[in-house]
Image 1 (cartoon, rainbow, N blue to C red):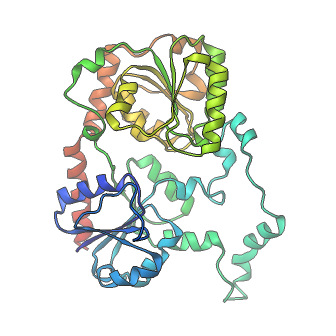
Image 2 (image 1 turned 180 degrees about the vertical axis):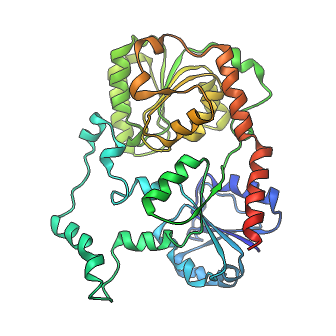
Image 3 (image 1 turned 135 degrees about the vertical axis):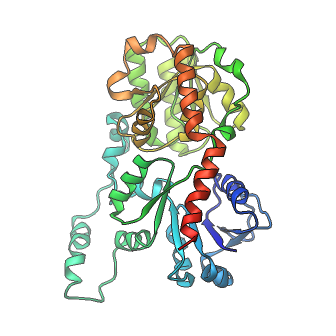
Length: 385
């Protein structure tokens, strides 16, 4: 196999397998970090899919050594053994899921992720001053004590800096990640899902469906800053329509808290989604959404934001989110949560003309034919060297 993929049991991997087999059939091997005696939750086992544990990666040493390109679909510390068997000439590509940077306080402080109310409920844990000082001084002390072990963050960055490419859907997110890990890696444009995967392009009637619901966030994680959105929305308008909040996965304690707060704020109009829904069912909610609010200050919920834009919602995103700046750059009509979420903008949704404008741009940017062509062109160039 010329192309290896190292991954965990994640919901994106099946789509990645389909994509790469379309452009490089029979040339991919997906190695899933997962116990063999346990069933996989998301990934479907195929002829080109194998499982491994950190201590059993040696079984695939020959494949690792001979691979021309190795893709890391996210990077977790238990993948580190892979590098013992990788050739120096192999090109390494890291698909950053975001958690590797945003969830690491050494790279991105929690106070930048959370809005005021959410931050007060989930303040960052303070490390002991002595430990912080030791980590700070470690690189300087190593000038005199060469065998001083690397700190956790130094180990992580030493691995991430081995990557030759960082894959991201758009330039703004790549630039952000690159600046945080201070690497010379190049950008590889890649999206796990095409527009065709997320929505039905042939159903033009959806554009005329009555839009009336509010839609908040994409999951049960506190980076959505739900409580702050609830308070802001409640202060700006009398919500007589349903307030739909997807909470099908995430942190259980946080989901319970958000659910209780939602009912207290919006009463019977609060409609939490507390289970993981099939895509078709999930899209039914998006089709009738008038206002969608995402107060995540990081790239998050792209697989919800794109379909809800396609279906015609007026979307509000945080200006701290790189996805907001990407959408604005390509001309999408999207609104700023911090400066444009007001009574006037909540009165009406988008017009048919505005919805069609957004659809045209989304199709140009994210249709499958274009994404596959761009990906193959990029990887062909990598394989030449």
